[in-house]
Length: 601
Image (cartoon, rainbow, N blue to C red; front, side, top):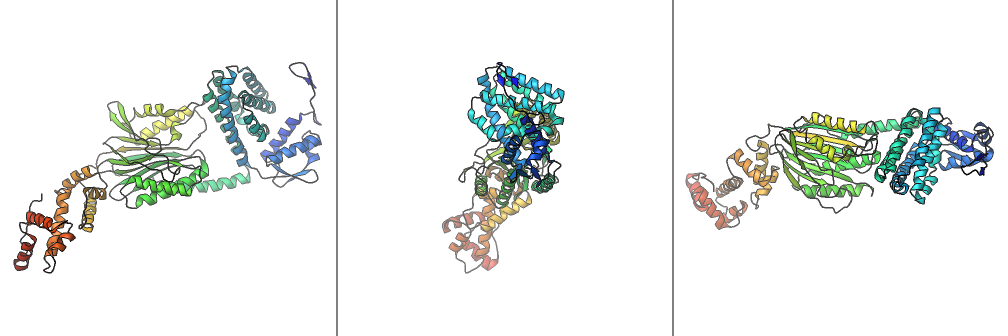
């Protein structure tokens, strides 16, 4: 028997050994969750009641609660069968709890109006209980703390969900596994109190979510010695090896572009993605993406995205917008409805330093252009939604001319959304301020500075999201004096294949992977001719070969060589060769070839 704070009498039932039934139930929950009882073992109700200081009615009620949590299966004759551990079920419940408390924290900040006396008292009780080594009392104060915030939110639905998941009991079940981390768990409540006192609802909500997710991390540790966990870890190690194979090898290098990459999933495997891929025309594909969600599900979507993108990129293509639209349809058709991916895809030409890209809802990659001690910053902004959301999404292609010394930094939001102990994000502003001062460094140095800053800001907080960072620097050495021999060969093959068609400058430029204007400049450096002169020369040479056949008609020769009319062909041929097609044939048949190719117009 005890008295409440108003002096009225309250009757409290005590178990056979003088323990409170709630604490006895919590101790039993801890024993079940810790693996003391083997899966398949039969528990007799009367024996459990005696061991844990409960009467039979309380023990039977506890059996019902544990069955609802999936820990046991109640059988006949007042007994129960122990089930295999279900750490995933516990983590799922804590994911729901994290969302509940974030919502409650935002609402409670306003409702409390700065009055956090009750919360501070519960925190004081936690500290005192921890100091005395009384974990049961500590967790009871912890439960009261969080339920007080739920009640202060004035949202009955949140409390009903909390109770339906038996989160009180789950917290009591876990307390035995938190001994070495208990001080950190207890002290993580103070920033929550401070945020609520100052009326900062958003910050309080994020701190509550972070607290619960940190608590959830200990669930994995609590089953680390079980056979189930070891089997799962073996499978995950295999999955990590498979995922590592998706990323480009460290030995892969893009000409005149020094690169460094960093990838670290929040869990064993993740949904971030980056890739480098050699393409035709001395071009290189550069990609970085971020699949919604984390873990195995996101990793599977990432694998699908990579496979779809590689398959499309390796096929001949001229339009990046169409390429990404095709990738979008493939991802949309093969992914669950709640999965999508942001994607930045670019094609880079080392000889020209031209970058063509599509940004499908991804964090804008940043180009740093050094000027004295600071850097000018350019953003390669999104021009479309992430892939996998809508089957008919459209995407726009953009270009950016890189210069020697420019640094391209691509990243996922796991970098900028790192949180400190108070729930504050590192953020885009800090990221860009750091980048603006380090553009003159090597990619490895820049990457190390970024990761050091992120790590120092997090100050030991658990990683919440997958993190990917790619740093590339444009180097000298790929200017050359024109197109590469391979590019000239591809243009020549295109001219021969389409000599009778109306071949355009854009088509010739695309075969070399360049813009039309830059292609014209580079082509003349390489061949001494403009693209028009080159095309015309090959058409005339083809016409001369055909005219040497006495049976060929001039009209057929004109059409076969890409001229629209016989008259147009005759005028061009006379201007180039100094004779009409008919005169050239007559002279060739009687005295051999006399046409020397003059200057082309």
